[in-house]
Image 1 (cartoon, one colour):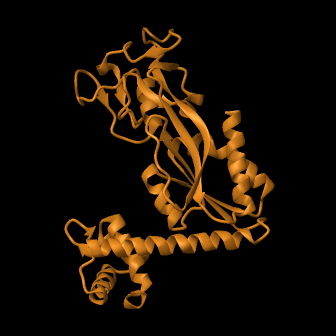
Image 2 (cartoon, one colour):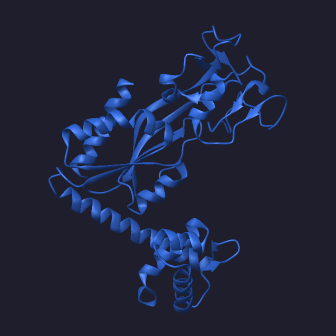
Image 3 (cartoon, rainbow, N blue to C red):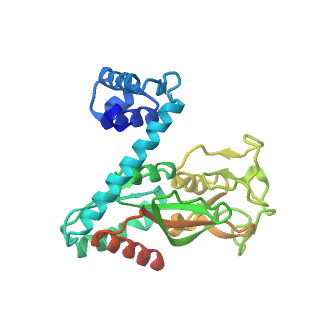
Length: 300
């Protein structure tokens, strides 16, 4: 069926469905909205079926077949580019790293500084990402390496075509205001604090037996934080608005108004990984950055 459609139209279809908007796809691709609509219409004409439902924007069954094809094409092209780059000596080129916010703020800077020192000709790009974006960006060849995470109690499967290596365990800690009655304790259990004392954060406690954070939102004086930036939650704790579950990496430079204690029961561990395309060859600069990330985590 490859002769039925222009592969460039698949790129347009993927952008439309991923962004949920013809206008957003046009802006990302540098087209007019009319051009995007025409490409999708031409794709539907050639395939002989609708590929997109307009409101809300989502792929039809035929569209999903084409999206799967586009994903395979993108992954093959990205893999080829990576393997061709690996044939060079690795002293130049670029390294595009994606990382979630707390890793980008803690682990990444020292590792990139070391890479800059040993590979001064390499152009470095750092992109802060939300976890759900990472795998798709690797498959599309928009980043070369990513730092990802999952939880010990809820491991995430690695999609076929990607190679993942464990980087470190990052225990989840309890952050309390320094004035809190339990600030002098050695550790905290889930029974030590009432449910309305907690500030909700993005830490995943789903399916965790004995979770210290209750499921009801808006109960009592509890503060529900609707956001992904752990540093904001840390500042809420520092202001005395409650206690929160936060990863230890973020708490290495906690303000003096915050006390950090281990959570004794249940224990909660976030696992950090490096992730990239599973290819036969990888550039020397990417392999070196992976090594520097491991060294930095060990030192922290």
